[in-house]
Amino acid sequence: MIRKCMIIIGLSIALSACAAKYATGPLFSEAPPPPLKKSILYIYRVDSPLVWTPIVRINDKPFVELAKLGYSYTYLSPGIYKLTIEYGGKASAFITEFFIEEGQEVFKKYYDSGSQKLLTDLPKTKALDEIKEYRYIEPLNTRF
Image (cartoon, rainbow, N blue to C red):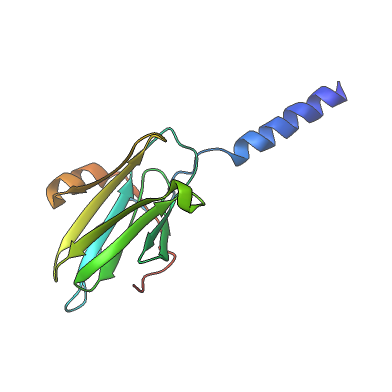
């Protein structure tokens, strides 16, 4: 009997460690206006079947651990940026480049089902409607 209880407790702990990570910060609110000659990049992650939480990198620097139903933002100078979304290794990375102009607000929606990775740019009105119930994730880094 004790052995069965120990097995059940062990399995419960193992499964909870693999549980999907959802964002827990405050509900969405728009970022303060960007500093002079800067733009705002928002990125958010829809719910998906994957349990892992990817790290988003900008120009190879960690930006945010993008939990499900979470969003984050950063201010960027105009230019071309490399955006990488990875799950602990280069083999599973999604990599793209984007250009941002001064004063822009860019919204990127991320979805990953395991076999399909989608990063979509959305107009502000559509993005704001979608992420109003999402929760803020503190960035790991904001200097790019």
